Image (cartoon, rainbow, N blue to C red; front, side, top):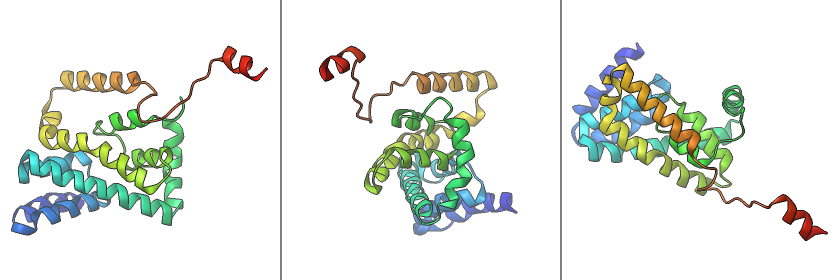
Length: 194
């Protein structure tokens, strides 16, 4: 049933004329209910609208999905308990930085809403959350729209190289960047306080 629906929706969007962009953005919003990956929906956008408009519509749809997730999490805190177990498994080595979250958005199989939860934990207001959510979906929206088919069609060897490259970037990102951190050396701290 869901497979037929996921095949029928892009065809319906393609035939809807001027309403196609709105329907495509709505497709992003119902994507979690259909258990479709972000990559698939962005690829559909590239096919239907081309790289530029497909990317723009995907960025709008993904940002709206982040905003909806924020309000659902605020209204129904028990929704967050579902992510608690995944969260504990992912964060064994400490919390993720905003830079690492941005890189993880580029990994097609990373859980989209779990990453939104991390952004929510790293930010202090809805405005800040929306800003970082928007910034975090720009690059994946563009890449998945323009190169989505390439990622799927890559031979296993090249897929492994791409995954290794993303892992190197993920673990190589310093804990500086979006976060403001203060570092005080041990000797200077005790020297100043004596």
